Image (tube, rainbow, N blue to C red; front, side, top):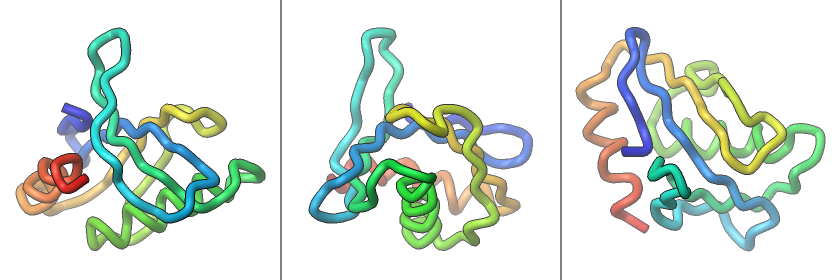
Length: 104
């Protein structure tokens, strides 16, 4: 799975492709260590944090959460990122998270 439950919400692993024609989830990517990442295309350019801001805005809209619920834990300047999602409604969010990669 590209997400895991934590005490305060979820950690989600994403693989970002900037400079795309549109913002979209394009599937699930499995790396050489068999870790899954949610593949996300973003229109933003990867400079001065623009792609990170757009990633958080895209996910917050998709998951119906505030932007402040998201924190980039690792990969701030890389294609592969880990985001912490802080939420107090885990069951509803888990159902949504589990379908994200399937909709691509």
